[in-house]
Image (tube, rainbow, N blue to C red; front, side, top):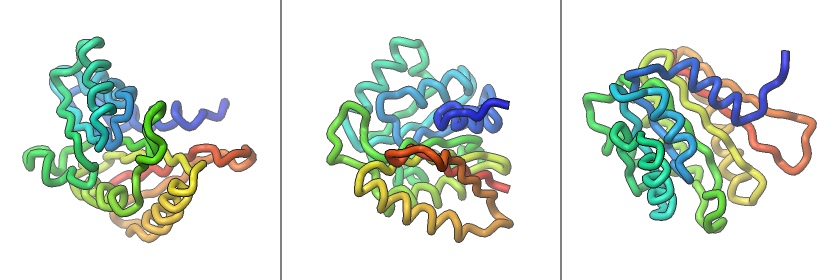
Length: 190
């Protein structure tokens, strides 16, 4: 058995939960890599909802989706992921099969603009509520900067307190690497 890196393992978790025709969320679209990945999985009959507060992230993602021919099944919102429940139409509530967040800052963007624990925890609460049974929410936590360390600590406190009758929570990380390597928290709805 070969241990998977963080991002391949995140996608393996998504692959286990999301299929053709499903509904998925990219909570931090960034440069659109995960948005495109989700769009390819859900196909023409599925739907992906993507969130990012930065205009550049939305523009980069739109361009990536258009170039790859996957823009029709994606709805992008230039707002915080903590608006998920109010912006995702109610017929999709209870049907979300997968969600992914890459927390921190936009790669290649302004490192002063970062995700925050208050908005992220609110988004996680909302998405858990909207998820279908066996749906998976994957948080890739980049904590190599001061704000990331604060978000990491608050998220760990939050997910540790989640009712095990409602969700399973997994923490996947390398423990012998230097420089605060990213790690995953995965939440599966029961």
